[in-house]
Image (cartoon, rainbow, N blue to C red; front, side, top):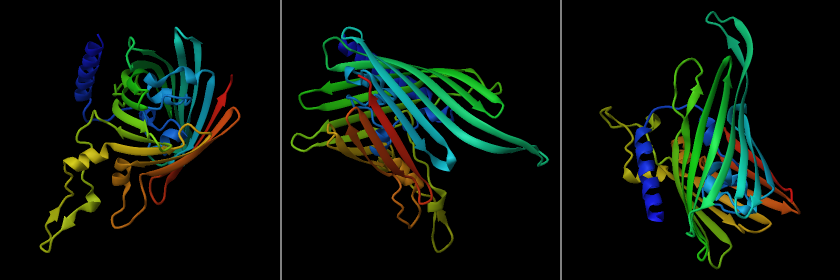
Length: 339
C-alpha cells in the first residue's frame, strides 16, 4: 500500500510539473520566505520537524505535536519598502487526531502616487495580499512516512483591482529517527483564481521542492540541502551583462551548462546547536547569488546568517539576508509557548 501511495504521488508530481513549465503567475508572495529560520538556512527548508510552528506553512507534512500551543509571529523589512509577515499557530486535539495548524501570510506593497495618461495626479493607492491556511498531517500506516496538506484562501487588492483564489499545498516527509535523517517533497500552490483582477485568468505560482537534512552524530550541527523549483527546467537564463566580445566585435552570450542549471536549483544551510536554547544559522542560495552577482565585483549575494535565543517560553529569531550591494533584508521572529 505504501509503495502504491509513493508511486502515485511521484506520477502526480511529474504531470503537474510538466504542465506548469514556463510562463508567469499571480500571487507570487505565496513563495516568499516564511520565517527568520528559513531565511537563514538559504530561503527554503522542508525538513524541520520540531517546535518551529512556522515550518507548517511551507511543508504541511512537518506538522507535529511539538508545535502544540505554539504561536509564531514573523516580520520582514523587504526590498523597496515592502513589508510582509506570517503568523502561525498549532493545536493538538488529542494523540489520535494529532495536530491542526493555522497560518496567515500577508504582504503590504506600500503607497504609490497615481497619474492618468496625461500626467495628472489621481492621488495615492495601495496594494496588499493575504493568504489564510489550515493544515493537517498524518502518519502513513506504521511507516516512517508522513503526509500533510494545507488549504489556502487568498485575497489580493492592487489599486482598484481585486482577486480571490484558493490553493492547496501537499507535503511528504520521510523521518529516520535512528540516523536523525529527514527527506521531504513539497508541492505548493496547486489552485486557481476564483475571481480575477480584470477578466484575465492567471496561473498560481506552482512550486515543487525537495529537501534533505541530518544532524551529525558527534557534532551539534544539522545540515540542509534543498532543491527548489523542480517544476521548471532549465531555470537559468543567460545574463546580458556577461556577453563577451572578441577582437572582431563578435559577441558571445553566456553559456550555462547542465551543472550550472543544477547549481541554480540548489540551496544549502547549516544550523549550529539545532536543539539548543541558542543556535546559529547559515545559508547560501546559489540561484540568488548567480542572478544578483555583479560582474567583476564581489557582493556576497546569496549569503544569509541568523540566530535564535530562547528565554523561558519565548524564542526570538533574527536573520540578515544578502541580496545585492544596495539591497538586503532583515527578518524578525517571535515564537511564544502558550502552554
